[in-house]
Length: 356
Ligand SMILES: C[S@@+](CC[C@H](N)C(=O)[O-])C[C@H]1O[C@@H](n2cnc3c(N)ncnc32)[C@H](O)[C@@H]1O
Image (cartoon, rainbow, N blue to C red; front, side):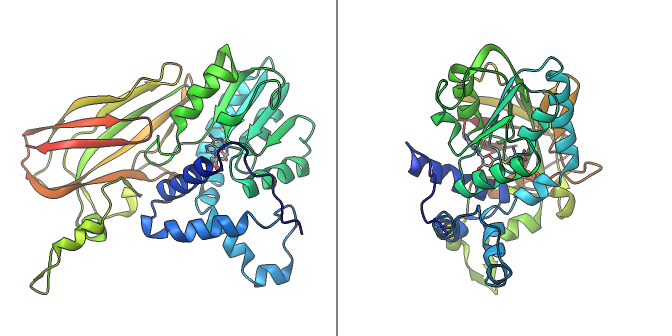
């Protein structure tokens, strides 16, 4: 067993932070798990995951450890709606071949789809060492080793002439968390456009639209806030809660929609804007206590195909909706309007200004 690993050169600490943030955001886990993830990351990067696990290692818990490191990869790989949408887009884009860059290999799935649909050459990069190694094994196992170059690097560390022979004709990437931006997708796409892609390169997806609505949910509130319990005021404990968005499958959660659904951002990945703050008006459609704003998005994977992370889809998506709890709940009355401001800073979307 080796102990040396092809770790990312250049920015190991940035890589680790992105990895941990991605885990927390995508899984909706709270910060309490940060230390656990850190320990798992450090431990697992010291093991050579090229080796098949023995029964003894499985019994000793190695399988549990690997699945703990990447908990959302499995539902994601099994999300056939997501996979089929990407495959359809790759198939139509690669009708005449082309050089493809895939940011965020994971298992190598999208890179292999590109190869199977006629890509002349695919470069796929993955920042997590053991995931990158597994992608290499999977790509080889499926017979695409000659067509796909799998690299263990953060995309922003890739260099044309070193990692890719030439700039790519097509970028395919799925580095979107429940809140869209938490895996630094904007930075990665913008860097790729400037340094790794041809000027007229196709982007898959080409953009995203973000939607929001106001909700009442005692269930979500009680998972993250406390008030008077047994006649004691426990509210100072709320200092330990999160004000970031949290991932919830609303379809599996007790909640009530209080407002219309409003489009809050419409992003074209070829023209990623600077930080934005936009006033948003919600019409109140049901009276109730407003605990949170829920938001989700549609990825435009090709001209006529979208992937939606909306609640209540016919098939549950691997993405949850992003839910931002307000500091204190407030009453809303049917028929009235409420103004909020939606913000994004390339790393997150959030809301301020809750007044009826
Ligand atoms: C959501 S998964 C998608 C995996 C695979 N492309 C798929 O669709 O099944 C994203 C993967 O990208 C990696 N990743 C995120 N940002 C990256 C970046 N800028 N450069 C390289 N890898 C990145 C993550 O570690 C994760 O394994």
